[in-house]
Image (tube, rainbow, N blue to C red; front, side, top):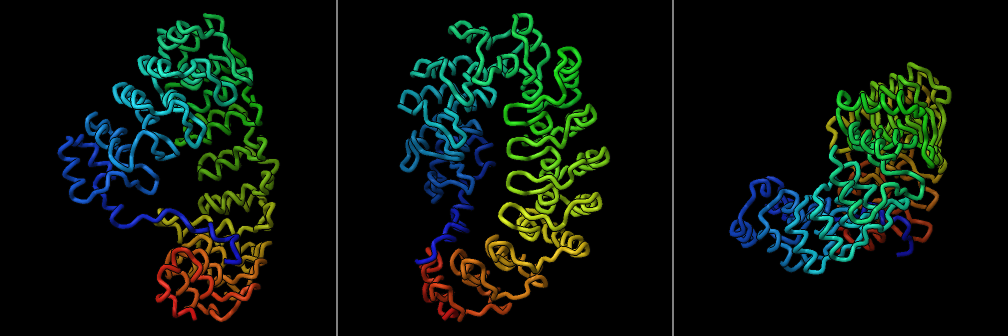
Length: 496
């Protein structure tokens, strides 16, 4: 294959119907706490205990997370294809999951079998670090890791220690604090950025705990506000905590960390967003135009999370730099077109957003329009059609190729979503146009498609199969070299 640049596109894990129907990969199966004989019966039926779902959760991981009987979990781990070193979701081993669930018996068993205490997941967390960040309170599990060689003073991200990670899980009796003190960890310990135990404790949004630490001489720094903004408790529970930080401790509402993030950056970055907390910060005057080191502002994040009410609140209070871009050259409008509702896109344009904005790679809004499609959203196509009307009514030329020469046809192929082609067709001037790599949309589809649907659709819409790349290759030549399509060459005869 002479042209390799695009081979990685579209080549993901392929899961057959057999895997999708694997009983052992169904969460409901494990919620019922099946006994060992039941599990063995399912395996005899052909359900593979070593297979994983598209997110790389296998049967053993699901069993651990659903607190299946210990003998079932041990049985699964010992089966061929599993084992203590197996990498699962986010590159985590079974020891990560066992410790995270607070399963001391399983954790001890895995450690005795030689499970690595230093294996890091895709986010750089060891099993103990991951479990602690996930809320681990059981000191018995901490002891198990220490007894198997973990240094309690081991440094993690930014020089943080396990005590830093654990403190937000502590109670008003300082059970966890006293545990670490008994192990020789000083209460004054700081990470490489100078953040102390009280700062990290603020993530738990526990006012009584924070006051106890202050009584012991550990006063939080301004970073406490940023840690607290990452918390997930209901606003009614934590409003006094924030009032204490701002009014009693006089921490600036516009405090930023070393990377330029303020409280709004963090409040808008979690899995679940506390709208009331975000509104509090906005009303208190936290800057939603503050750019971090990557150039991202809270306003951009609000568009990215499609938080209509919060965006409207920000816009109602005024935006000085409506066309600010991050380091990738993406503006709030770019984020809006990709992630937000048509209504928010229209509102932003009315506020003066530049419809001709391009990112650092020269991509105009057409790219973000295609990227906005999410097949899990039943209203995705309707939303895109609405955005197209909004943009074209304002004068956006969606027929214009991107800087790399890709037309909407190329972008739809890269997205691998055939349904999009019909929507974008009115804005594809020449379906046989070549990009800067000398590839037509059909060439690209032949290279990266996992099935023939997109290829046939392109042909139905006028793609010329006789056209050649700059290296004298036809769509047929490229399809033959496609690792997936090339397995069934007889099915590719129509491309000759």
